[in-house]
Length: 201
Image (cartoon, rainbow, N blue to C red):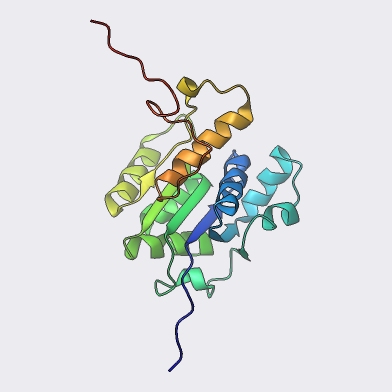
């Protein structure tokens, strides 16, 4: 009788074409540091944003992931619910991808993997990037939330006294990963590593 291979924690990482490519990069770096197996999918739009916002090559980003899947590879392991994962994060998540997930459209591997995570009742975290928001965006966020997903706009945590833009990105990435049960040492916590404000009497 053949024994099953030992299971290692896995996280699916999607990167879309919304502004904020560095969020996805920082998520991958933190997961690599935590020795979590990652399955990366980057949309075509993500590569355009990468070229515009960073000096990273596609190979640089791929080197941060354990496995990389093309967006059209709908037969990849992460397209099946029988493939075990802890969940998925899309960082950043475009309004196009949000709308597709809310509508159940699974015409690429990012939206298919997200749909699998939702149907299997696993955790889905979407780092949505857009402002301002119109009613359609808000309704899509509501729908995904009702399905069990978590909408996490990467809002700067000013209380953590960030000194650089890298500090802001790192904090948001670490905070988002904590929603997937992945804890890192890179996130200041109010009342723990950061002093809370005591109420005056």
